[in-house]
Amino acid sequence: MLTALLGLLFWWLKRRAAAADDPNNQNKKRYEQIDEDIANSERRAGTDAPYHGQVNATADLDELERLQRAKSSGDQRGSK
Image (cartoon, rainbow, N blue to C red):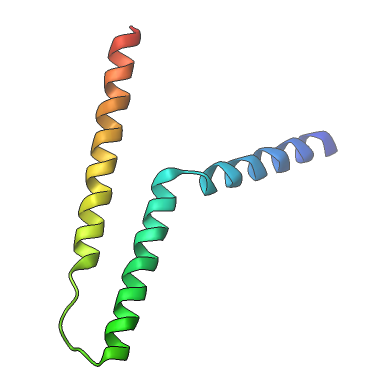
């Protein structure tokens, strides 16, 4: 039973490490930080203009995911 629990713990730690290295997650976090930094600098500058960077960052991430899906589906067709 202890061996099973240790195996499960090892698997869980390995999954967390893999999720942290995922490029999509890293990009999302980076874009969120950039959006937050820009919003904070606008607040400090006293501007009330809306910032549309989050929409652009989201569009970039959507495009990245679309390209990765296209690449992975192309790889699957090529390997058959």
